Amino acid sequence: MRQSHLFTKTRKTAPKDEVAKNAQLLIRGGFIHKEMAGVYSYLPLGLRVLENIKRIVREEMSALGAQEIIMTALQRKELWETTSRWSDEVVDVWFKSQLRAGGEVGFGWSHEEPIADMMRSHVDSFRDLPIFVHQFQTKLRNELRAKSGIMRGREFVMNDMYSFCRGEEEHARFYDQTIEAYMRVFTRVGIGEDTFVTFASGGAFTKFSHEFQTVTETGEDVIYVHREKRLAINEEVLNDETLRELGVTREELQKVNTAEVGNIFNFGTQKSEDLGLVFKDEKGVSTPVWMGSYGIGVTRLMGLLVEKFSDEKGIVWPEEVAPLSVHLVSLAGGSSEVEKEAERVYELLAEHGIEVLFDDRDVRAGEKFADSDLIGIPLRLVVSEKSMAEGGVEMTTRANGASSLVPESNLIERIKKAGVRV
RNA sequence: CGGGGCGUAGUAUACCGGUAGUACGCUUGCUUUGGGAGCAAGUAGACCGAGUUCGAUUCUCGGCGCCCCGACCA
Image 1 (cartoon, rainbow, N blue to C red):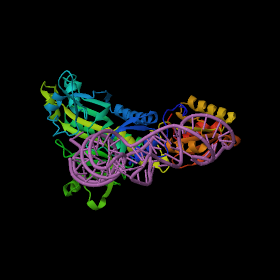
Image 2: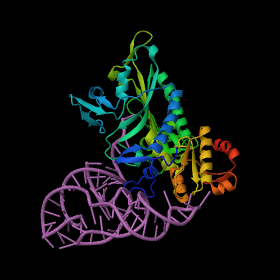
Image 3: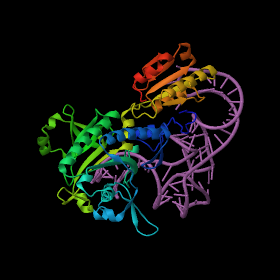
Image 4: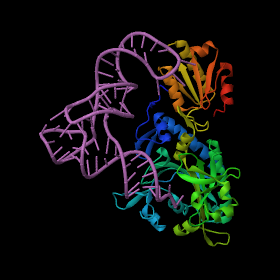
């Protein structure tokens, strides 16, 4: 991708109406555009990051056997009335609208009811189960107060997965596999060490639910962690009984601020019973499906990565989610020889399937470096008169600033060694 | 929803009861070219409405928008 072709602009100053680091840096770097409070558009670079996160999630969900779908944003009132969740008193984040033809629709803030209802068309027998389905959906929630940049918006992308099982045992197996799959996702995007499967309040069907909480100063939640045992308890369920049950003492736990990046629920059979999602078991007995729900806040995750991986100069993307892998900077300064050399390097990288942002713009070195640091691509290559005189290309790691001159003959090898996604 | 704050060029800001200045950006020219260049000439602005006043961007009220703390977050 040529930077001269990229329509987005970087900015020196953060907009005054953003305080959250994630929004400030993402807007300054041209990754996102603020449409209104809590509502952001994703621009070319931002979309690439988003798609990379989705790719990782998709791979891990697929490995679990989940099939991908996309459900609708518009939802039926009657469905939610069945489970008593249409009322604004019960669910206070509804966006609702009128159909011109008559009737009322809701904008999806969750898809549990619609998917359970839809599954009635596809589930008849125990032979049809289990079924695992997931989607990447834009959720619409009329939050009273949007905040923290893209981490708590009124419109955001979520990966939500649903499991439909024959009973508790089958459900439990998938539930445990999902915990592991989710942790693989968080490890791959670079926050594995700081993300804890956390005991949280369970709701109607189980004593606890599990949240995936990532340590970050700007987090909204407070949890207590035992780093050696990799065990964590949400403040909301921290009491003597919980401590006893989990075999830890209050003194062993460390209090930390966290952001919730994922959440999984065991629904039992309640929702299926309400909505009539049943199957015939081996004996021909009509039995409600055992449901589970599993979410990862994709856009929130992106915001969290910026919060965690940035310095005073800008973003430092983890390799797997970086918008592109290499930032090739041409410091031609009017020299057509340098220009040609940079073009050659660009083509060389492309031939090897390396994703490159090529700064071929006619601007000064300082501006190019500042932009490069702000955008935060993991590896920077500089082609200049200086590097050519020294017989190579200058390679700099964004994360630690380590820099070295690499002869072109070794370039591809060195890039791949640096852990670049190809 | 309770509390607090803020709305001035594209962006960030300053001043002021007598229609607004700076920096960056953008346009043109020349110079410059390894860390957001220099000179010159341009471009561009008071959220909306009502009230007070001879006169409102400034004061008052209302609306709208934005931010923060709290509450909320199946």
